[in-house]
Image 1 (cartoon, helix red, strand yellow):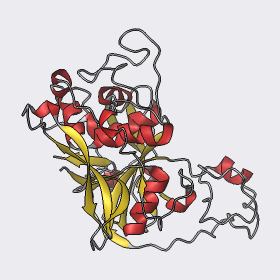
Image 2 (cartoon, one colour; image 1 turned 45 degrees about the vertical axis):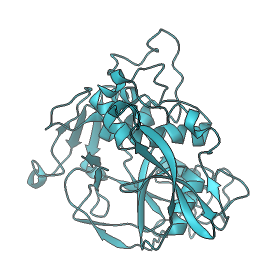
Image 3 (cartoon, one colour; image 1 turned 180 degrees about the horizontal axis):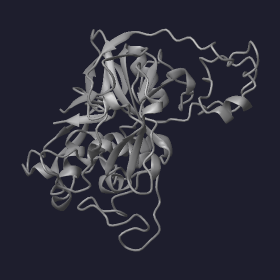
Length: 358
């Protein structure tokens, strides 16, 4: 399983019920601009949003329920995301790395959870829609050329050089700007030259446009269960994908998705995804990654002057803030009223992006 390093500044603070994410957008030229004016000593170029800003997408179930499965076991084996790659798809290094690391599964099963879309996610389409360059602007002279503020080229090739940053580690930018499509439209065997139509000339149908990925840490069992109810599959560095939980013979289990090779063919590209129950046990803290809609007003359509910030956070956009009925003198969203209880966790100062290391 791959290692994740979430790069920000020397140390940052994150509550257990927060998602940390990158708000930057990729422009028409494939450039992601990091403006130093947006940089903070707490989260670098990233932002946080609370779990409580989002409503569960499944009714009649909560963290106390005996069982829940975001991806039904009934037809799991026949889902397109579950089906192994072809040899040609495997030969595209970025595609097979994303599948091996279960990021392929995260995007594919998220489309099923949110939009009931049965797709084999086009990793090459996400790469093409993503960045080719991270560019830093407005950096003070004393910080120019230092780690975390140096422009970075992003590979948009199937098989990158060992020293390059691969596009599959930055798929969320393409998800936000373009969405994810089925590999039957944009094949996973090569990076497309454009994104105006499917390979066969038909119209593109994309899913999850406007969504991105967020990471949580310092969580407990209920944190993971809440994430499953609100965001669907939860990617974990060591345990694969959490997709639900159930009690078996009195023992609470996570329902996970793992990867294995086909025992008969012994050909790596035919690796299978399968569901496996894992006892929940006594792990002290949990960290995970989810696909989510970064707009903090998701599920907040009827805000009143009394709506708690824990339910619907105050908008960071000035226009939206001025339109918020809680933005009044002494109101919930008045300047200086936001308070967050935080826990400190340490990280490393390098790139302010989600980076994946094999």
